[in-house]
Every structure is written in C-alpha cells, then in structure tokens.
Image (tube, rainbow, N blue to C red):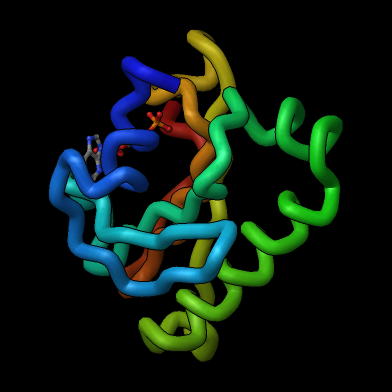
Length: 115
Ligand code: AMP
C-alpha cells in the first residue's frame, strides 16, 4: 500500500527500532510509548485491521499473536502480566490502518477503558 505508514516501515523507507522480525511479521517499538514497554507487532502484508487479517489469512493472524507472545517473553513481561491490544476503526481509536498488535506492559496498566 503506497501511502501506508507501516508498509513504509516494512520497506525500510521510514526508520523504526525493530525488536523482532520474521518473513511475515515485524515488531518495533512504538514511537510514543504509553507504558515502559510498548511494542507494535504487524504482518508485513497490508491488512487494515485484526478482523480483516483473520478473515483473509487466519494463519498469518496466528503468527502475529505468536510473535506478540515472543516479544512479551523477551521484554520480561510474562511474570507480572501485560496487555495485547488491537484497535479498530474510528471509535476504537485506530490511527494507522495497517493491523498492529500493541504489546504493552512493564507497569500496572490501569483499567482497560479510561473512564
Ligand atoms: P493505533 O492508534 O492503534 O492505530 O496505534 C498507532 C500507533 O502507532 C500509536 O501508538 C503511535 O504512537 C504509533 N506510531 C505512529 N507512527 C509511528 C512510527 N513512525 N514508528 C513507531 N510507532 C508509530
């Protein structure tokens, strides 16, 4: 996708701090972290959101989740816990329309939805 920010990161046109890479996925640190650990996991192929990915390529959706688990382990999040978030659409607060799992942790994260 020509104008997709995360496709440009995949292509190496925009720099990112990559923490994990496979043939089909990329994980990199969020540029504006909301917690001590905040990593984004994406499929390198462009899919708009989690449901679009799951419908088009369930095996790839599973790979994204598996990488999120590996990142959580590598970042030391598994003892105290963490959160994996997929935002979707305007009401879901999705800013970048290329599916990404937010892996966040490293401190208590508070309620799931801000009141
Ligand atoms: P969302 O609101 O779920 O679409 O999340 C998009 C995330 O992408 C936000 O947490 C942003 O801080 C993050 N972000 C935006 N641009 C970049 C970038 N160039 N590198 C890394 N993360 C980014």
